[in-house]
Image 1 (cartoon, rainbow, N blue to C red):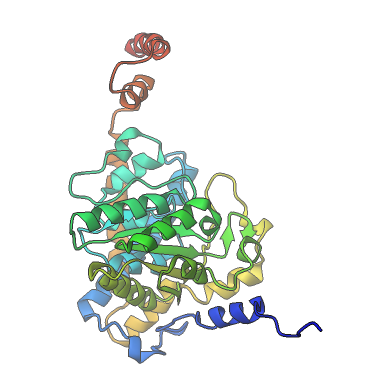
Image 2: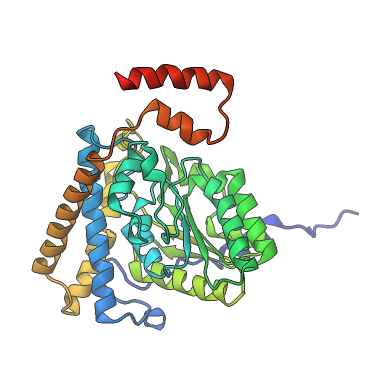
Length: 370
């Protein structure tokens, strides 16, 4: 007689896993501390600095969109709405850490030391934009979705073998978590217990594909379990929660305890990129309005104003400085000699050129000399 017992109960197993991933929040939408046990105890100066960077980044996004529409920038992926996820996670890093960004993660590498003018040149596809200054531990933004996860696993292993007390941090979106490179990267780092921090910025849409259609998993964070990696889901619109999660992940990594996986639940207010995406075709006004109530900049502003650390005057100073810095950076980028076809050929082939490229090189060299 058949037994009613099922030794493999996937529904029960999934529920047990998913119940472990209650989203961590410290600062609510009203700028109030709701989990004092996790308060990061940042100094007043550090809180102001973090807010300043977030405001600067919001202005950078606005100006970059404008410059793109003017034809002065090339590829651009808007970042508004993700300032807490991006800037607060970076705030927990050290100079010796390596950042392997996706194409939306330009703000983190700028704050890590990449000159803003080079970020603009990268957007234009100019080779100078990919020339990282000595001592700036960043990779150029990765265009291939999820490929940076495999690279981060390799960089982390290299640090581990050299005995460095540093981490490799990489970012992708919710769509990136469906890529093969994503799984290979987290599995490799998990197997070797390498000092990596894997961050998935779940901004709800991979271009136009909603998160619900991306995976049947209740959380993206739970995907790290299969790789044996401690994983957490945090409110990605809460800068304090993102900071604490990244800070603690870094502590684990440099202590030799292996990688960590962080899912930041956030939202991008603009289009996927400025290359013709229209978010009104797949997002409703009601959805946008609900997420605007969670705005990370507004939330943090309320928190700092209540502590007497922030006001309109201070924010105006940061905004003005951002505009001046951006103006100077775009002018510097404009002053770089325009890229030539011969530059591309010679950079890609530093040794002997194949016969067909030799012929093309000479043709373009003659054209460029006229």
